[in-house]
Image (cartoon, rainbow, N blue to C red; front, side, top):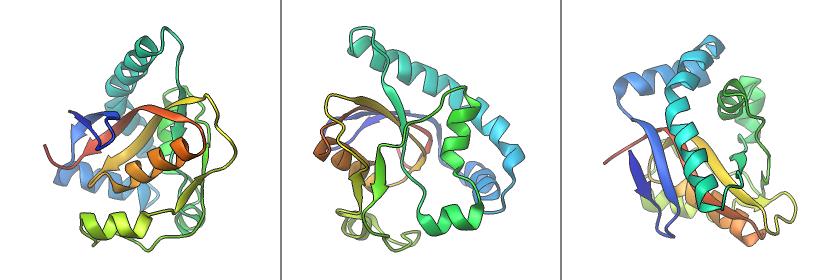
Length: 173
């Protein structure tokens, strides 16, 4: 499933988000069913490999750095692990951590697109200068695109460039 955000960053999702995918991700993330990392990574792998290859081609054969959006402090503490980082590691890649939370946004589970955009505005910043670095951003689920858009903005403001986004699942067309 391909898409691009408002700024033109290309995205690729391995699956359409549906009730089954949602239930499996909920069990993995919220119930700490970490054994699900293997089948989830297997589901993500074809899209991940394709996105890395496409980004590398676009960059003249140079591979992008693989990055994840940091888990919110309370979620990381409660879970004891970072779900997306674990997926990326299962694929044999160690993700970089170019971002940090400047502030903790509210839980946006029940928010619509406009509320999510407002909630996340300015919430992420580059952890350090990213001058000249290019990233492929990996996410578990893209719903409205607000979190990914905020990450892309923060990396750009830090001097980096997101050359693509790959997600396990995406809501919508």
